[in-house]
Length: 394
Picture 1 (tube, rainbow, N blue to C red):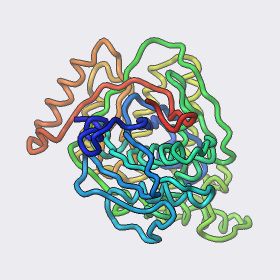
Picture 2: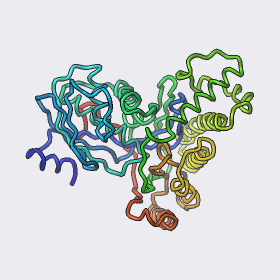
Picture 3: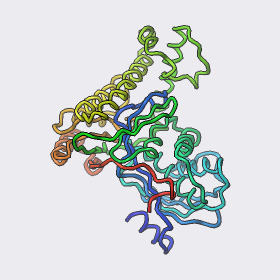
Picture 4: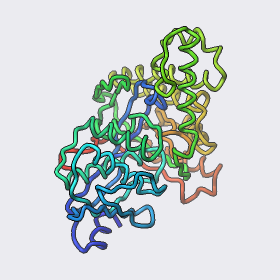
């Protein structure tokens, strides 16, 4: 049953519209958007769907096909504190929208996701899709960057995840078969068309779910900031508040000169930042040149740095990554998302998708047979970002 069918079952009528926000993959630029580095990203043809209709009362009544219990709140009386359930992302979206616009109408809505949760920015997708639906019924026309920053603020301040703007930017700005290269320092970006041979993405779900707010995700950001703060101090450079300090503030030559004075965890985080920033730039060039082999090599190197320097990845994801490296037909791959559970993404030769899925699945489930039925492999294509013009796609 999809969200439209569930809506008809619940309300006895067709939804007025269906909002859609794609998931994203970010082959390069992992873990450096919050340090104002650069990213490579693409939207994919899987995502969050919300079937909805206007409620004159101002009440938002929201159901999910993936989670139990209905959520309900008024657009002008949103709880200040999160409830700790799946609907916090909807409340966060409504709260950010209300801060900038007057709202009169609520919505009746049913939410569904195309793929399991974990590693594809599903939380950002829910926020953006719900925001676009609520904006639509209130005749609010969303601006792309306003949407990106509001959705980021919703996760940072309400949900409690200190994410950067990678997820939201990919889901709003991306175009099919074009790589988004975004400099998170000044939000300048380029969409680079693909001119090389065909490729596909395969997303391999480990069978495990995770919550970023309850993981080491926020700790890693503090470690990056600590590295930056110390490097600036060692070099005698000016620095301000700790919470506002990022590794982009540190010149590469300063890092090279003083890195050995850093505690090992801080040195590793900074090493990942500077090497990943370079890979993001090199990757954009390889994409521009249509060089899928070089691009894939950089993605594999990114995955290696995430394990060794950023020190993320549970045993299951690390196993998936290692299996992908040894699988013919995979150009490159790495963890998708934070890497503390969730999934891996691979860029593959489309002629070999069946063999790749069979090999990876056999090897992975041979190690973790208890994840049979939870593990999943899904072939995806690149796609356009969210359509903000009509509050979603019908």
